[in-house]
Image (cartoon, rainbow, N blue to C red):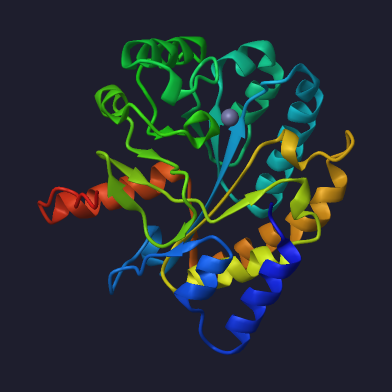
Length: 286
Ligand SMILES: [Zn+2]
């Protein structure tokens, strides 16, 4: 269980002391992977931020919260011009086309990624079944080819050969890591740093410390959430008190040229083009 007060105190003490150790990060269950010297992100920024949102309803009582949360996240995205990466579960989009179309109609760049059609567990399905479910999702969303970004339901990773075959470029791995994108399993793993749900209420200063730590270490600050997980007792407004200052901070760091605000696909494209310009194949770390 996440303990934001304790995590915040530990992180604050370390940042205050002028350095953050791997051991301290391990204690708060996050790894550190140093970025190679000279790592740059889109626009030449030293670090980047992306926010991925799993648009899925797996329990019927979450339809209302999914709709309300989607609306609020789009409002924040628009107010601070922060692009979002949506991992769309096809069945949820079909059952709530209005919310899906609100994402498509946003004036701010919103990337559409895939989260399977039926919220399929990749560890409990075979490769053919998994591929068919993703293809069904692409058909439901009227996509002719696979988009760049995939997010595994429950972050249960498997069947990477299917994702490569379909043309995906990036995914969000399970393990929390402060570091650059990691090319593994044939795709860029844009590793998560922080998950926002109702337990994050009041954690804005902790989240902003993660933003600052990622900025200082040339890492990707990757925050992820679900629309329904920012809704408290039917109301998305309380969590706005936490999320609004975070989005504002991201905008300010971007204005100062420190942080590129990107979708997952944009970060993957950036690193793919660096590799192509060096005529290198991406390094496989595992
Ligand atoms: Zn999901």
